[in-house]
Length: 124
Image 1: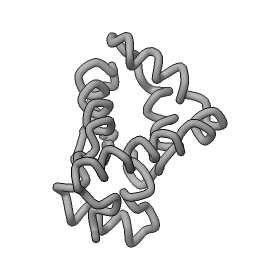
Image 2: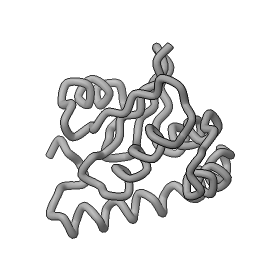
Image 3: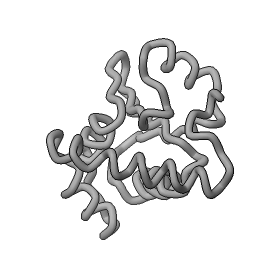
């Protein structure tokens, strides 16, 4: 099955992580989608309780991981060739550690979006 990461393309940190994951993450068939551009998919996920404003979404068939769970699952599957991804993998591959650290990523995202003049919630 295809593994799909839906991320906030308005956030430079999210965009960089997504690009590195795709190019250097070693996850075969990983599909990366900018959630700000894919309104239909974003709305479908929001209706199911997975708002992009609250975190990235990882999809595999009918299975959905959201926020810290999405990043943890993706990090567990990575075989990074990139040193930064290796560090991030070590930090976020554990669910408990990811839950603790993920709010800092959301805060960095909020600040970056604010600086860029973009809403935290792409649906508003």
